[in-house]
Image (cartoon, rainbow, N blue to C red; front, side, top):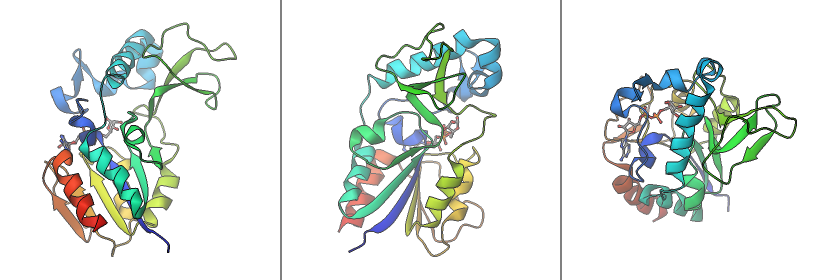
Length: 229
Ligand code: APR
């Protein structure tokens, strides 16, 4: 029998209980720089060492943390459902928890890519990416991240996937960063849409929205349990 399709949009909040701070904690500042000023093509042009340092610190942290109960529960969902995760996160905690279909809208921290050819993408096996690290064609490598001001290459495919959702979930995202935040409007009006976040509130005129104000690590295992019954 064909499995029912669940599409899940996740954000920084799902990884918070693993110990990864969300973007808009600390007033969105890092060493007194606004995050938007570090994660941008302009910053890369003006101060690449600062940008490399910012991602090296985050990558180092990623090697030290583990998936939490929410990531693990979502992997369990695959027993009964066709599950597609669309994450805004650049960590690999969904994959490490066992989820098999994960689309990274905003890139991946453990990858680097060539500044000369965007198709040359490399898996990093250590936390450091340095000035002078080059691709096979001899150009500097940059973090494989979609920066503020850059297009989100996978957004159209993500929108198409959202149209097929029979159940939709939004977990741990402030829903302020577009185009990702707009994906929910592609979901069929009749499909239930769970929004799990301690700060979740109504979203425009989205129908069948079920708001659950709580932490992902507590709420998601219960919700998954119900869905697997
Ligand atoms: N469980 C669930 N949600 C949580 C938890 C938790 N334990 N802790 C915090 N949250 C929620 C917050 O209430 C907030 O709504 O996680 C959300 C995090 O929001 P943001 O920091 O804005 O992160 P996100 O929505 O993922 O940001 C989107 O913006 O900075 C860019 O590209 C970056 O992918 C990122 C995008």
